[in-house]
Length: 262
Image (tube, rainbow, N blue to C red; front, side, top):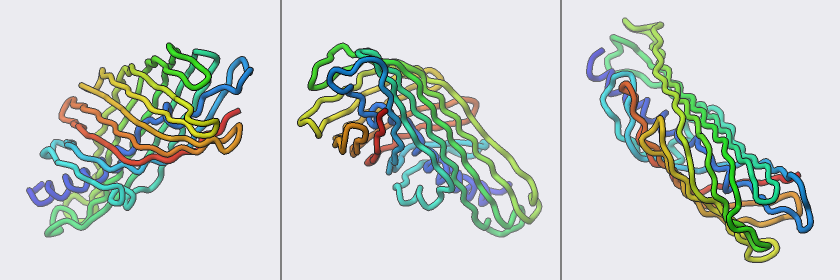
């Protein structure tokens, strides 16, 4: 493969991986978990959400040179084929169980210079991120709570390149990585009024990645006893490198969500 094809593939992969990186967990922010006064036993909440994140950092795949990434959310949205993001929580008194599942699929294609080795290259990137954790409220008052949390986060990234036309026509190659990180930190909530509250968290960990961190702050509004709307800002960073697969990135941007309690 000549240098022009390599550079073209590297650019396409960078654009797709930056879009995939929007996948990340936000369950502590999007679940409004305060129990109604006098209520006992387990309560549950589910929160679909939308994270308008851009990305900066470095990625490396397929043995190609390391590529610097710097993509706004508009750039990522242009390559998005499908995305699903939802968080959940179960809570009983001081104890809580939190979860988050995110899946994104992005695709891009482009002509190659010269068109000898290939006339066109299609790139598809799929990312899955899942969090499962538990928490205990070290501070628990009618105005709010502060939880110590711990859990695991699973990451999986799979990128496929398909060549069309030219000498490489019909050839398809994939590069992927899956890893697990242990996460610990704090999450909390404080009511400013009966309807308005602040919520946020700070998490850090590692394992498969050298470091995995996540911070956020948001403001929520209780529309009624079962529905809350939340807006905030979140930043997440991860530094993973193994067998030539590199993903060292920081994602940040506004977040919007709707929490449903039952």
